[in-house]
Image 1: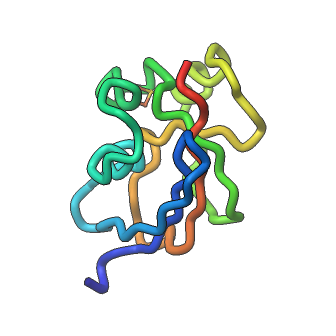
Image 2: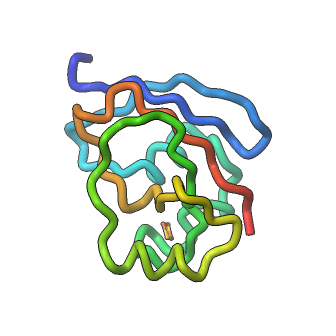
Length: 110
Ligand code: FES
C-alpha cells in the first residue's frame, strides 16, 4: 500500500527486521513493534502508551526528522535506564509518511 512506510527495527536480540508500517491507522512505533511481535508480550508497551514506563524506549539510528519530544517523554527518559542521546519513547512517535526509511533499535528491557 502506498500509505505504508518502510521502517527497520532491530530487536533486543540484535536481529534486524524490515517492516512496513501504515501511516493511516494512527499507530505509534510501540504499537508497530507489538503488532509485528518484535518484543515478547509484556516487555513493551506496559503503560499502554502513556509515556510512563519507558518499556518502549528505542534508539533512533537514522537521521529521520522526528517530532520534538514533549515534556512527558523528556521526563520519563530522564528517569529511565540505558538512555542515550538518541533515545525516544516509541509510544510517543506517531507513524507518518515522513518516517519512510526510519531505523531504530529497541533499548534493552529494564
Ligand atoms: S509504552 Fe510506556 S512509555 Fe511508551
